[in-house]
Length: 107
Image (cartoon, rainbow, N blue to C red; front, side, top):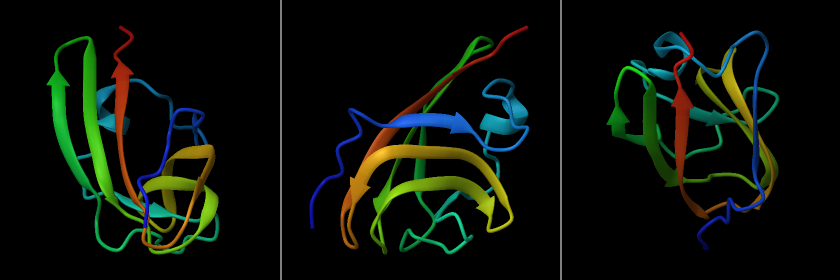
């Protein structure tokens, strides 16, 4: 078990989800991490903590434990609704993760 290093990680939107606006990054629902096939790869719903919530910026800290190994994962609210793809990392079953996610509101 190790802490996953996110220093080289990349994020991209999945489908037509823009990385702006409170609708897509507000995450009122519980978040899960999935592989590309929609299999849940975090042991439980990930923990999310609001670090900042202003009219221009929304920041979360997301943490949890992987229950699979891989080099990319998807953040989503269900196995069929992914919001973001995180790639260019490496993780193993049992590894813990913690990363901050910032979004700026474009008005």
